[in-house]
Amino acid sequence: MAERPKNLVVLGSTGTVGSLALELAGESPDRFRVIGLAAGRNAALLAEQVARFRPRLVSVADEGTRRALERRLGGRTESLIRDDEAGLVEVASLDEADLVVSAIVGFAGLAPTLAALQAGKTVALACKESLVAGGPVVMKAAQASGATILPVDSEHSAIFQVLAGQRRQEIKRVVLTASGGPFFHLSAEELTRVTAAQALAHPTWVMGPKITIDSASLMNKGLEVIEACWLFDLGPDQIEMHIHRQSVVHSAVEFIDGSILAQMGVPDMRLPLAFALHYPQRAPVPGLEPLDLFQVGRLTFERPDFERFPCPRLALEAARAGQGAPAALNAADEVAVAAFLEGRIGFTDIPTVIQETLAAHRPRPLDDLEAILDVDASARRQAGLVVERLAGSWAGFKEMAS
Image (cartoon, rainbow, N blue to C red; front, side, top):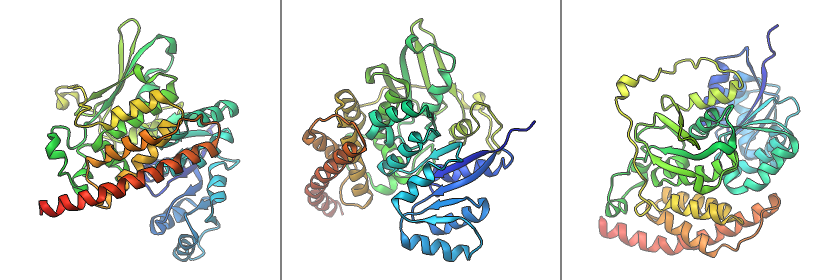
């Protein structure tokens, strides 16, 4: 007897990961039925998704987007469209949902992810910020409801796959790989002149602007260390970053007997996404080229340089400190990256904003969502003040450089 299709909800459906998730679901209509979508303000793309999948409930960022979506659909759908925060939480926790893909970028993904976990859903987690900022609360909610978290980041998916059937107490360390981004071999002086356009040109992965800048600064790897600590119950000193320019080994685990097991594959987000969507089964991924080891030729690994790229070091320090420091780190990074993309500060100002925000952070336990929101708001205010101070210097630097 054939299994019924999984009822699928996609949060962040118009983003890079959300769009890929729907692409994969659309290629297997016998296995997936899309019942809920949540997106921001891209009414054009969302209208295409709604018309194709006919979800039961849709959440958008605001009333203007809702009206734009309704105009584009022209009454061709029966989907209920919501434009408030309650609607987002409702989509995330739909009773019929079997799997929720959580792919809303940044801190904004925390509340709906938490709602899905509290409702006992299986969550394919692509927004690492939910665990970075709210790790204690998120994991507590998952444990209380019996919800399952399936990591979608390629590195954490790799670790998840490697650990299947293994005894967690036999883990010695986790090797978390990173491409190194587009600037890994630039000097400290050259990094001061990096532009947003250059930083958005990642050499390996196709991603949204926030994660692409984080990859260029190596902050993405720092955030992934914190995420891995929560997902796999590890201490930050059990996780070691390796720069792996080929992006073929997605991560590895060393066990106490000296054995190292790694997961390898082509650098394509469809691979970890398909694993999470079809779990616990595996399925072919249409259009995915097989990994040709002869073409790869060699695999190299280098140590990260925390002097030129201080962001992952700051993340490690925040992970060790706990007490809300990772939430403050995440907030400061979001503010700094936005300011860099707007041309208000330089690339090397990003870690300065984060470091000064962490220095001003007042440690406190994170017992609930309100506590997380409070730390986040405080850190954003502090980071904003640092950005304002640095913006004048950056403007002067650009004027002299021109």
